[in-house]
Length: 118
Image (tube, rainbow, N blue to C red; front, side, top):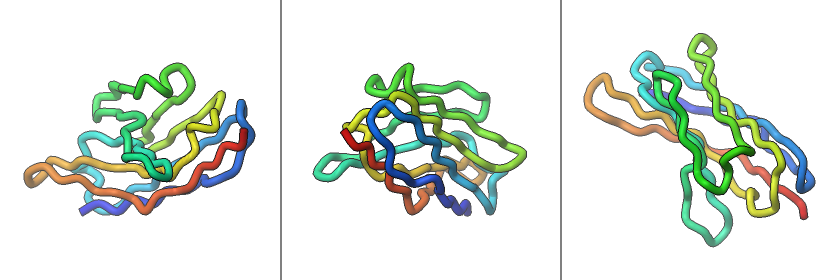
């Protein structure tokens, strides 16, 4: 199993920057991909960015060019650097990990709140 804990919640003005991180523990050697998701009030959860074990990344169209996902395997940490923030980026941000040691499994953190004031 994998445990995930996010940090870096905050309130920032539109146009500003914020970084959130996720600490992974447990069977981290089994992690194949990690991702950031967000959910705004009244909206469905959406995947913001994903990074594979090989370092390939993919972003939602709404954040391309503004957000950067990165992963430090030695520290077992996942990061999301968010620049040029917009009010619509407000939401609860959660990290996820997909493991593949004994079949496929997904794990989730509790999430951290990001609020962008307009």
